[in-house]
Length: 148
Image (cartoon, rainbow, N blue to C red; front, side, top):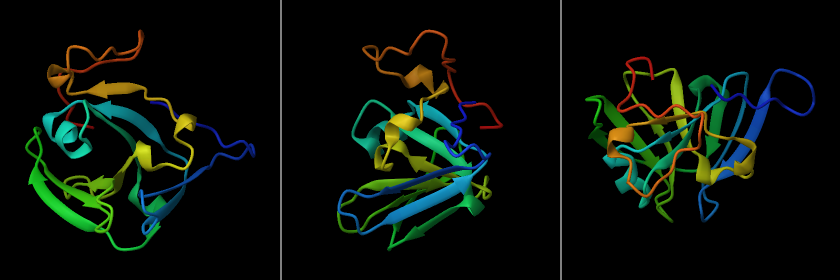
């Protein structure tokens, strides 16, 4: 998947982000970042848009300051999803799943430098809006593989 290399030449990728009002800030230093676009109906609803751009990172490599509230629901995949958001401005910040406790899924729109990460995969394309175009050469899977 898409891996952005740190400009310092080491293998770690460092990034930061925040919610709209700044009450929640996060940072990560990791060797694994996968950037993807999810077109499932839940992501469409929670983002208020046609899709959600997500960075998948190891949970242990992510830290945040500030309070996050959680909305729990069942995803199209059948998995339990914990959507974490700022209680003040309502910005969705990250998603977690008890079925994948080692991973966190950060909402790319909250990144301080979102242009650094280009999606390498689109999921749940069976729900993709017909006016959304996936760039040529980027895989667009109908649903979500069991490993994702």
